[in-house]
Length: 103
Image (cartoon, rainbow, N blue to C red):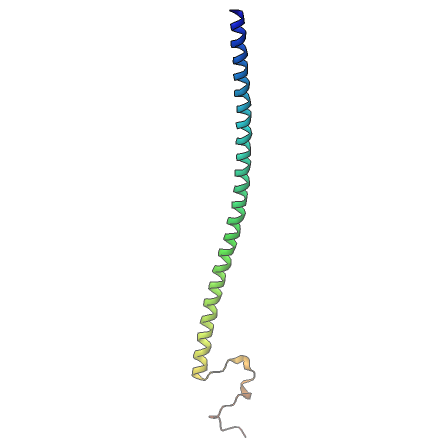
């Protein structure tokens, strides 16, 4: 009977050893999975930050384009009306055919 108890004890020890090694293996896999998850989260944060910057750039570009279109509309309206912008120089140098007082 003691021999049977010895075999049972040996089997229990083998099973316990196998369970312990499986537990260690699973713990290692869990830790590796957590590390991979942390890396993925950090990559995601970087990607999200880059996307946020790109969104702000796109919004600013759209606002600038809208402003440029508005300025272009105003310039076209001034051209149609024959109004010259003031940055063309001294108003005395402009050719006004309606002004006949000049010698």
